[in-house]
Length: 382
Ligand code: NAD
Ligand code: MG
Image (spheres, helix red, strand yellow):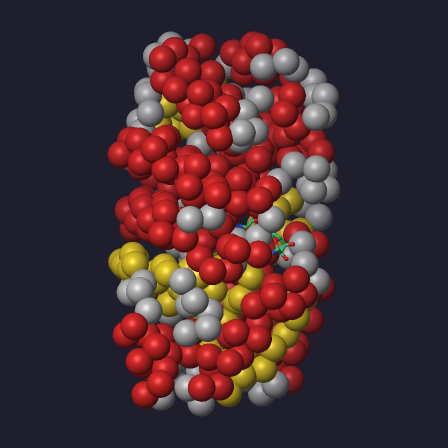
């Protein structure tokens, strides 16, 4: 144990984002080698010196040995459940497999479930933890940039159904979240860019300082500078924490947590049209959707053209997906609008969008005319 504490003291201190909610408070720790040091970070928090780890096969091969080593040094008993990688694991059948494995292992109310992986593992594991024995303690160790900045804050967990994405789920706040930037060293560049889109989204929707910071430092984040990555993640998590604290269960009729969907109505339509088959990552759809949301806001007279141009220039300079043509696929405006109408945000036949009055100034708008959306899609090459 002394050796472990020594290692913690000499390593760079993790950054910390407190998440303060009505029903629970926890910290997001952000730094290097946190998977390796998870045992030391968690041992005081765990109700029982026993954990169940859920991970996917890709992450298991790359990062599970470090987690096991850290847990063993601190005398934390562990077992591991591995699921196949990819969105296909957020299903009722995989949920059944994981919960059966937890019960078969004889988990008790104090046994903590650790999610080690991207958003898929986090959502599936969180839902299994939320429901097994009516709720087991839960720790998130997100390993993709997207999950580090997005699923790490807010406590949403769940799985998909044939009726749509994330339709079965629960709010289940973690005991703690360990964001290890060292995990990002094995993540493909395309996944890093996809995660960056959600950081940029936070800046564009409500944190103009974050956008300015991104404009200066995003290149270093994309290139893998760990200190810059940690700072970007800290800012994005801190921003999301303020939004979530204000609207924990997405109950506000306007603004609130729904603002986090900036760029997502367009992004989801592109994803849905391609059938979630991996041709377009979620973050890539968001990246294109962010620019489209600015275009729509300009078209409706809410936002200055100059802000749209700044966003376009930012995306282009970084080589981020920015236009529908960047997907390499052809879409029809009418089909995309039909997907948007099917999206749950539709009300009284009018499309609902998150729009902007400028960078960092988003608002929800419940009656956007179809023809304005169609104009924007056509202007972007539909
Ligand atoms: P993912 O979990 O499928 O991970 C993407 C790929 O990267 C997978 O193949 C995975 O095996 C691999 N991988 C993960 N970490 C790696 C690493 N360090 N090195 C190499 N490969 C690694 O996808 P994602 O983008 O992380 O998450 C998407 C999911 O997250 C969606 O299902 C979405 O609904 C959900 N999500 C949830 C929330 C929330 O608040 N709960 C927020 C955003 C997204
Ligand atoms: Mg998203």
